[in-house]
Image 1 (cartoon, rainbow, N blue to C red):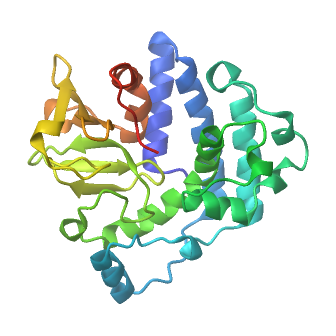
Image 2 (cartoon, rainbow, N blue to C red):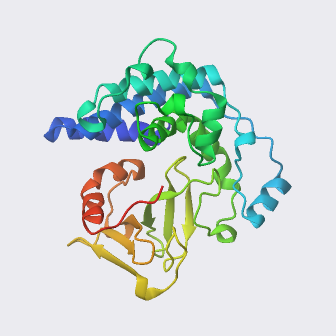
Length: 279
């Protein structure tokens, strides 16, 4: 079944389309969400073999709960989603450029091997055959969006097992992914990071760069908008940036995965100022 968040995202996009039309990027995103919705009907709830003691030890030692060997994938189902994701990307050349024919012809799904998936999961270089004619970065995004339904399913199952105050690390407690968005909660303004891979949320220090770890206040600053709803946290030491929404400034429902794309102007500003979103 589609998650409640996905249903709300699709509803929000439909409302936006009726009111003002959808930008090309949000049209693309809606198609990806629909691919994920279809995939989740095949996936179901993942089987978790971790005991409560194993979860406690991994958390205390700083290991994410989900390593590649814990990641139970149906390769045939993954390859089917891969083909569908490639098809969506190929319909938006204005956004991503032309997708190589090698990835669109019948049988291209077999380029996505377990070796390639493991390499992506562990942050290693992708096999040349898979990334031929396309940048490693773009292929990484394609694989990420292919695996997202599985990663998100594991995250929904595992995140409640995480003792948030004991984690507070710069990478996801479920899959080890980097954050690419954050929010300040309504209760006390605590900063929570959002995983770029599985959408898990975890609490993190307000005064610390989630990329290089500096706590030097002179290196950390932020820009904000007139309503102070959004912040752009930047680090002078590593030149990284992080987009943040302050939930104390709004009573509206906030859909964090959608906010990633709705705040594209912040990405543009950050890059213009010489900052980057670390891989």
